[in-house]
Structures are given as C-alpha cells and as structure tokens.
Length: 98
Image 1 (cartoon, rainbow, N blue to C red):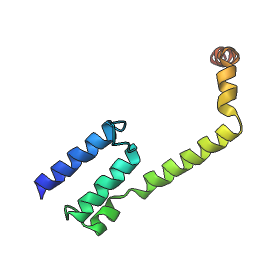
Image 2: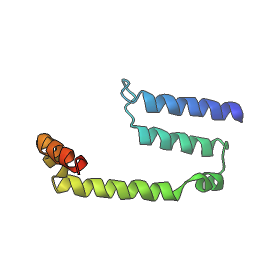
Image 3: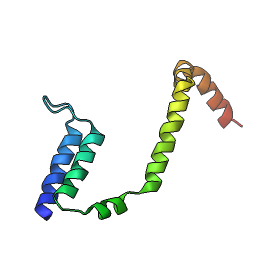
Image 4: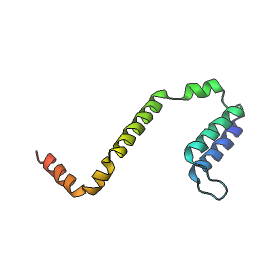
C-alpha cells in the first residue's frame, strides 16, 4: 500500500510540475484532484479519511480571498495601482514620515 501511495504521489507531483507537456495538458488543481481520486480508488485512503483531511477553514479563506480579488479586479483596482506607482510612492513616503 505504501508503494502504491508513493507512486501515485510521484505521478501527481510530476503532473503538477510539468503541466505543459505535449499530449498532457492538465492544470495543477486537476492533477491534484486526480491524484486524490486515485488514492481513494486504489484504497490507499478511505473516502471518510479523505473528507476528514480537508481543512474547511482554509477552503473558506481561499474562497473569500478569491471573491475579494474578483471584486477588486472588476472595480479596476489593479489597473489603478499599475498606472499610479509614482503617486503611491509619494503617499508611502509621506505616510512613513509621520
């Protein structure tokens, strides 16, 4: 069982590193998902153990961050920051001089 887990982990790790190989175009989250499913299907870990291993606080944090980034992007915050670096530098230097 440990050998199967090691082989699946190695294949998953290779899939996350080399995501632009010819005839093997898979993104990192998909490679991780397929690795987790393969671990469950081969019996390395049970479904209930896999569910217990999920940290839902981290999932909630990532979801919140993605929502905030999406809103900031729609509002043009990143374009504003990219266009005004000198203005922000002046603001930063005046802030630190207080």
